[in-house]
Image (cartoon, rainbow, N blue to C red):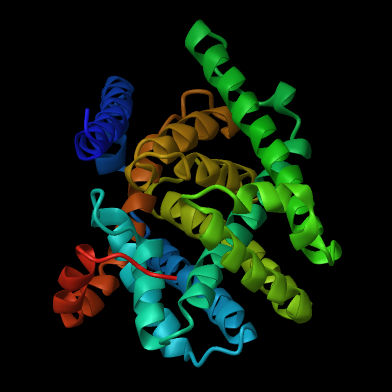
Length: 346
């Protein structure tokens, strides 16, 4: 099987898994009469507008985080560029099917703006992603460790127990990844001669990635001279998680009256966003399944199981915000088509 066919089959498999998960959740929601409850409930559009504003503000904060990291490398870059490429990348993360993902779009566009600084451009995108994931995993890990899951209203049937076991497994893996992430940052920031270690030399010898790895490590190590920017980026990433929690709570408050508390959402949301990071198209299905289960588990009313609909509402918020990227896409459409068949040389 050639690589192109394998990639297409893998993409098809991912979409199939997402739609199977969504189909099962839709069937369960229909069985529980959730949609009739949605139509009958009184809508609070002020809360829905709040959810949209919170979501939009959250993305703007994440773009500012990237802007700080790029500027820390002494690259000529404006916040408007960060917003433009950020929205464009966000859109491509949702609509691309194996062509150009959001990070690739940001890397290539930034590299074209900064001739001769492609390695730094790629490094800023990778480091921004890494800091964002580490903060999200940290937030989810703390939320998990501070929560007494023995007291939640998780379904007691076999399916509910399996879901709870899966939740524990995901959260424990998240804790492990958090530890690995901080150890990795510690190695890079507090090992001055990292490029002299045996591990580094072994990776550099790998033909496919060795050269790129060496250049990227040299750029990432440059962040040691800008520890303030790294700390600020991590702090902004924590705010991003707060913003998503507020947005999800706003959706729930706008659609239903019987919801988990705001404090509960600071546990539900980071865990759901970790599920959203699974390698499915845009995390589709993973987040919805996590929110559906956690809403039922954290609800005071065992019959309140409208988490799936709330997750869909939150997904609509994300799609609406991604729609802003369509404006930039239309402005840069020709350049995107040219890039889709090109490779970034660093």
